[in-house]
Image (tube, rainbow, N blue to C red; front, top):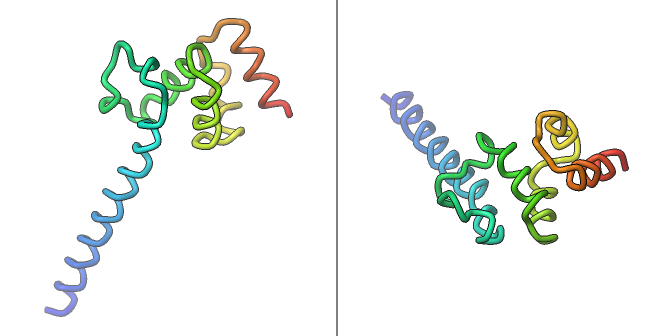
Length: 102
């Protein structure tokens, strides 16, 4: 009986922290410029599933503050790994290349 209660409460605690973690991970998107979400609802964007789209959008249409948020959320290694898959204009691609090489 004790094990059952412990397991259930541990599961509930893990689920609670997972929910809090997901909320925190998604809440930084609310600090991005609203102009970036002209064609899609901000609530529908998942920073992990839509990372390529989000990085492309910020690099090509975002403000400096948006770039700082992206840079703080995705580390340099992840940006370097994603860079060949991104569809960027030459100016944005060059900026990302210079940032990742430093």
